[in-house]
Length: 281
Image 1 (cartoon, rainbow, N blue to C red):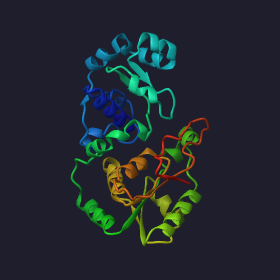
Image 2 (image 1 turned 120 degrees about the vertical axis):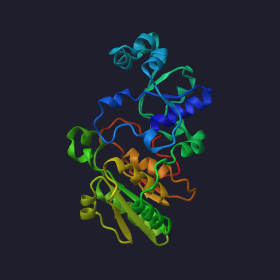
Image 3 (image 1 turned 135 degrees about the horizontal axis):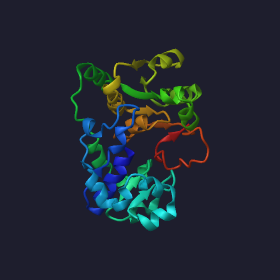
Image 4 (image 1 turned 135 degrees about the vertical axis):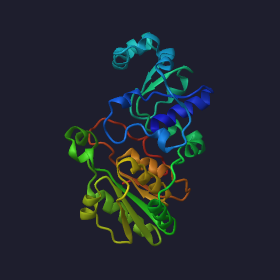
């Protein structure tokens, strides 16, 4: 969603068409693969090999893109249309790239697309009809002062390499955020979403009214994002899934709490990852 958002912002600003290269998903086995077009009313077309060659030329040959990504000097000289994210935080020179370009990176900052927020919220409206059970949950959320809590575990917990990069948030973070919102809000009701809901039930302490949402699995997992975005306030994990759940909530009075430390590894500057009006704890 971040990659789409930055590309959509550039395409609108430069008045050029937007194409999405989904070829890496042929070998991507995690989660549900590429789902933007199935779930959302997104713009842009799926890029063909011809589209990619028209931008990258001979750099589109197998192996050349990887070489260009690794060697910045070579990239600038041989393939200036290949734009590789230079670092994790916001890169202001992105607006100077060629009109015809191929983006590589995560681009995880609202600063890349804040000026088209209304357009993106329209693009990220859900095109699939709600099931009856999710309709019931949506009505329950709308009827109270709903706070979403997202606990991300899954590969963060089960895969050592992934855990070493992302880390698992301590329960103290959640309990501190819950306590803060309980003090700030009138009669909050917490809705807990997690890819390990049984773990959440066993470990999370909640002093207020709460519900564990556990029915959206597999190809229906995106509906957790949908329900989170309908909540009025948010406690997110170090996960872009709940980041977007909170961002898609358009309420100007929402309170969003994010973790102070996003990654377990050191050296990544995450100052631009969290919008200025969100709280870090």
